[in-house]
Image 1 (tube, helix red, strand yellow):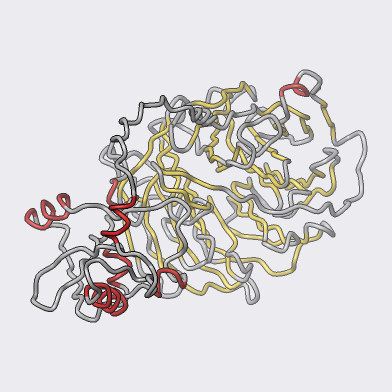
Image 2: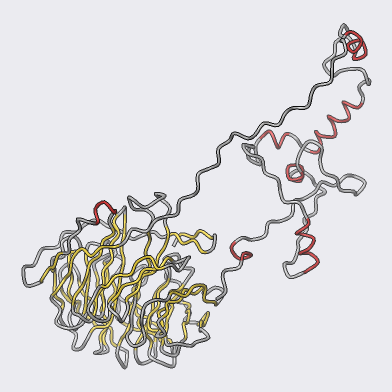
Length: 501
């Protein structure tokens, strides 16, 4: 597996410019660094080196890197700008015109240097200074962010069949789950809010609109339906056009478009307002398992059983990039990273792969779970900002996925280390989603055992007192209280590259 190149993560710095004298020779300044003088030198000519040239590479490696001084003023400070090449020559010329025994600050009555040397008695040579061992203490070692595990908070029951899809609302105050019907839940209490019925077959996918009000569902009845999640009612228009089962849907960041992938091997781009197909993409030669929008809505990613992952331009419908692994395993689900620079893909060879689609290569592979039959999905998350995790404020990203063994696995995105492994359900875990804001980190999972589990990450001092609550929808129905929430900000560090995801 190829790691990200250092040239990509750390671009090579340009060589330091040198000051040119009038006779055409180069020489460094006696009082200022070449960087300071080059800012005001009209004779300086920039030199560009090609990275592929072996001659230029050897020349660049031999040059001296730019010097830095602790506590020095910025490059545009008056102290540096005042010392230009013109003032440098003017001051030196004025000092050279002085008599050899004169001083710049001498007065007519002041003694000369020769007179001072005659009046001053000779002194013994100073002894060499003794070496003093350094007393500056070494800086303390940098503490790595410690991962606090998720603990099961409550179990939601009420579905009559295996739960195929689960999603947090954008504000995190509601959870939507689906088998042949859709149920919405209050996140904080686990109370059942609404049961949405209307599909004629099983539901495979759910998606929330960015405004937290509209819920979209894709079903095996070849339709996409829109629901008012707050009122618990269905909108009159359906999105019809696919010729087979609908496996995956996603809202655009503005909420005006929906992308869908189907068993008919096509990807459709819908106008939500008119409920019509804006563009049909003949995307794959096998059923499309997953689709997603990038964070700004300009790109779409799709995957299929043919082992291909394709990046599409939303405006033109043009395929910009095709990603394929050498194993060519069927790809069942796909998601853009929150920073928009990577794609996370689930394949039926028990692997989750992170792709740099700009370069067209797989940068990370996460293993340890089992996935060879079902369409398993997961999500990104962040850790390192909770109380008890050190150092505070240094966020790191993780990837989470379900497994056909009933487990949920968390991996560190950069190191690929398994952060946590929990037995969650009796049977395959089909879906996992995450949400977090201001010290609150939640996860939710669903599986073939007809249950939904809500997970919460708490400090170690509180983890012993977390008890698992079981909430049955037959007990009662609670009204929806719009809790404030929001999206999670993630910072990924890929081999030294810090990126906000």
